[in-house]
Length: 139
Image (cartoon, rainbow, N blue to C red; front, side, top):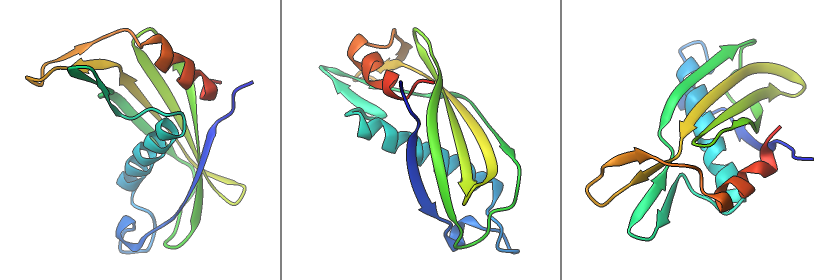
């Protein structure tokens, strides 16, 4: 059975508003950082060299539902799982917790693309080896 990728962050001052509460936009940065960590943990990268081109994962959707405030210097646990592993796309779910308190749930949808030397981008099928590695975190 697969399991979510787990990571942890301390809320930095730069990620808070004037009241010391984590700014809504910082959640998107944390989601992307956690996604990149998860990819590295299975031997992948968000920009994976592939011969004469690169396989990349442009975002096509990003959402976050906020449940509870997070404050400066709180320790936040982020669980990243894959809700959908399509033929060309991946939908990630990010659960944010402080201790056992759910504070936010976010989703990001990315599309597997080939980026050539002229920076032309075209969606492609997720390569079998990549799909196999991603499946470790599919729920």
